[in-house]
Length: 374
Ligand code: COA
Image (cartoon, rainbow, N blue to C red):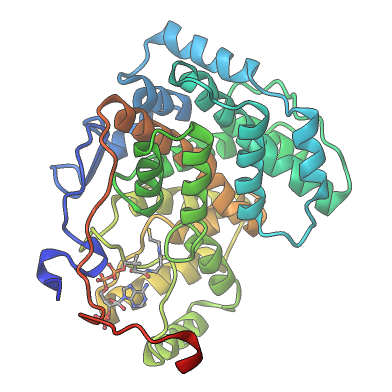
């Protein structure tokens, strides 16, 4: 038997490789990207600055940031063949299947044939993922073929503009920058590890990111913010929320948006997104979802010492910005593509194929019996 304390269960506590990208719960700041605390980055930086930090190795200066944003902007515009694929995907398709297929199709059309092309391919994905999500959503739900070539400078603004057909207000643009920064990177989580395993076979970048999207699709990973939204929407007021939460705990249900595999007392991303959710609630005059969310947080801590992870207050924050629930996890994809891709680059720079061993638990020796005699 693998010793649980040594990390046999879900590989907890096992060091599976090296990274210079991120620390989770091991420094003064609980979460850092290349040494910078997440609180500072979410308060002071734009998402593109953080993308540059992760992908190019240092914070950009004014000119570098300007050039990088101009480069990402110049890479917008969906290939016609990708639009055709998106138009064939039905309204009730799982949005993460749309993202996975969109990424894979991009890999068919713009295959990375040499690792020297990696930065081009990565930046193109960053430019196109919001378009893939909005083009499919608006075509399948509203019957319109949107023009994705908007003039917004940032990925955050571009996404909100395409979704709502008008340039976003400043508050929403800033909230989206903060959200994308919070979701950008998180060390060896399941989807990032998927990307690194794929990269270690020397596969192409689109395969690495497509695999990572598949891992993020699961409710124990990326899907939690959507399920948190479905839950809080069902509560009429904080007292109702409290009664229902207690009943769920009594039934031993998993409550999405709470708990974490590494953090033990709090998720540093929660304080940031909770403040944004509060500001956005004030902005829309919400008197239900924010107080309901706060009560859920109180009940979970009081009853189980379980805390909100990054996903819980993201649900209400996105909702207050008018973002449809089914796009929550695809937004996560756009953001995390920076972290995934930075890990792929890091893996490629010092690669050895990832191939762990298993503790065998099957029969010691099985006697062959011919098929007609079984
Ligand atoms: N709701 C109810 N109970 C929970 C819980 C939750 N969200 N998260 C953890 N628990 C329980 C576990 O079932 C476990 O109970 P047990 O000892 O009786 O089996 C106990 O708390 C300790 O779990 P822990 O070891 O801390 O969790 P994990 O590392 O196995 O799993 C998650 C981590 C994130 C998968 C888990 O907390 C979870 O499923 N959360 C909900 C999904 C989610 O929000 N995912 C996004 C993560 S950023």
